[in-house]
Length: 368
Image (cartoon, rainbow, N blue to C red; front, side):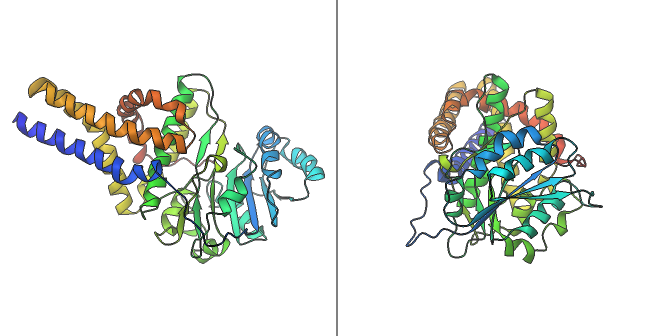
C-alpha cells in the first residue's frame, strides 16, 4: 500500500518539475523578440479613478512625465468621486496638456465593477493602442509607455505586462509580493507558451479595435471584476498576444497594510477564476493541486516508506524551483524574495486552504 503512496509522491514531484521547467522557465530565460524594425505607435493611457485623490496626486505625475516623443494622451475617468479627485485633476491639467479628464456623474445600471468607466475611457481614446493601469499604480520608470508599446508585433492585439508592489518592511509585504510574483510567473509563462489566460489591469495594453470587435465587456458585465483577466481569457490567443518583461516596464502599486484588507482583496480577485476556459482551469488546477498535495505525500513517504527517498524528492524539487525562481525573480525585479522561497513554498499550503473557498463564493459587487 505504501508503495502506491511513494509512486504517487514521485508522480506529483515530476508534475511540479514539469511546470517549472516547461512553463516557468520561459520567464526565467525570457528574451524579447528581435524586430526587423521598431515602430512607435500613438498611445492612449487610461486610468479609472473613484475617490482616488491621494493616489492620483502621488502617482499620476509618473504617468504624465513619460519619455515618449510620439503622440500620446492620458485619459482619467473620474467615476462619481466624492473626494477631491476633481480638484487634483484640475490642478494637474494646468501643467500637463496631454491629460484628458472625463467626469462621470451617474452610476451605470446593471454593470458591475469598473467596466463602464473603462469602456467610456476606451471609447474616448484617440489612438488605436490603449495602455491601462490603475490610480494606485505608478510606472517604475519614465520608459514604461515606450517599452509596453514596443511589444506590438505585426499581428499583436494584446500586450501583457507585470504589475508589482512597492517594497515595504514586514512579512505581510513579502507575502503579498511573492503571491503577486507567483501569479505573474504563471500568466506570463503561459502566454509565452502560447496559452494566454489572463492579464492584470495594473499593466496591460490592447487594441481599441479588438475591444469593440468583441463588444467590450458585454459578456461579463454581470460579473463584478474581470475587466482584465476575463477579457484577456476571452480575447487572447497564441497568435495575438505578446509579453513585455522588462524591469523598466513594471508598474508599482501600494500594497495592503493589514491582513484583513489583503485577504478581502484576494477573495474578490479569485471569484473570477471559475469563469476561465476549461483548459485554463485544468492547467491551473493541476498545478495548484500538485503544489498543495506535495507536502502531505512527502510526510507520508518519509514516515511510512523511506525517509531518504522522501528527502531526495524534496531536494530535487527545491533545486529546480530555486533555480527557476532565482532567474525569474531577477527578470521581475523581485530578487530580494529569493532567500525566502522555501518559506513561501511552505506558506502556499496554508494559502490554498485560506483562499480555495473563494472559487465557489458568489462575487461581491464592488467597484474595484
